[in-house]
Image 1 (spheres, one colour):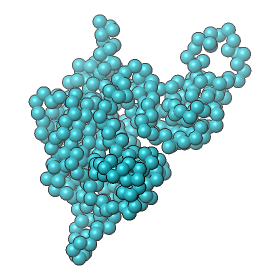
Image 2 (tube, helix red, strand yellow; image 1 turned 180 degrees about the horizontal axis):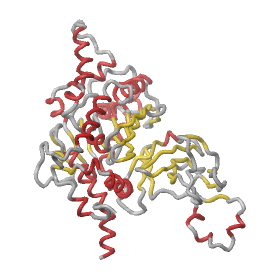
Image 3 (tube, one colour; image 1 turned 45 degrees about the vertical axis):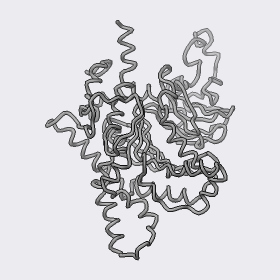
Length: 447
């Protein structure tokens, strides 16, 4: 047992308001504790209901380090099950997605289960007579996760049986999901194709922090976005020439500090927050013909305008997803080790919306988030340099002090200067909270 296991005081000591200890990024024991406590006690994104539209459809993924299956049951409800046979522990499915029909069947000994996890049949069942099997956990079948919530098509779960409610965990932050879904004239989204998958050799929290780090774009992306802007300017196009779609996407990354300061950052309790309170890099995209007419027909002019005038940049749902409402994108950061993170970037189709919007979203995803992108490598290099630099014994603490205030209260919603690092501090406040809540329970019970 290491120095941090079941030691809430040691965990709390890693965050001291405006600094965090390097161990939160590099220590493998901390990573294991995050999987055991943080990702169990928080509400974590699983998938979207459109990935399992029909009865028997399943989608396999993981929550923290726990393999799970999202599946559409015979009653039409979406369930989330641990991807483990209760017999010998074999993973039930290894395909990313598919349709299992009316039941799952273990490939090892042919135990079968209903799509809600209940045990359906065992070969040679008489071999368990008079063994006490009726009272075993295995008799209950595949175990469901602690609690599941479908919010406007987005499936979240809390692994822990007991803990914070969905409503209390997310609160007003759900307004970003609302805005993304409401951009569909039908009020529904559909996943558009498989995600782009990109392996990063760095700690998962570096990626999450970067989503609301507004002091890096004009620096880290100068080699990519800066070069693109320079080449466009050298073309010396006539004044008023509209930017091509690719330039609309990439040019705003080179906006000055003042643009990002005035953009604003909003933070919510439990580590959630978003950039782009007043405007964002998505604010000046060209209009798609016919889209506003469809929105007015669905919502009325006043509400349609309010929906589309909201141009939030990146909304972080702690601990590990980010969404972009104006371009219907979701990125999930899947921790694999203290220094290894898989990033999956999904795009969504607005049901009854123009296909040109889906095309723009796909272009953005390829340009910014793909392993072959011209922008994503800039960030990856910075993450990996940080992961290597934190091995240095020259300093043990990482500074997140920009626009810091004494006695910051993260239990309330707040809007601040768009270059503040308050959202990073907000995330670590939540990190400590969910890392230690069940440790404190254990200690109190022992005392």
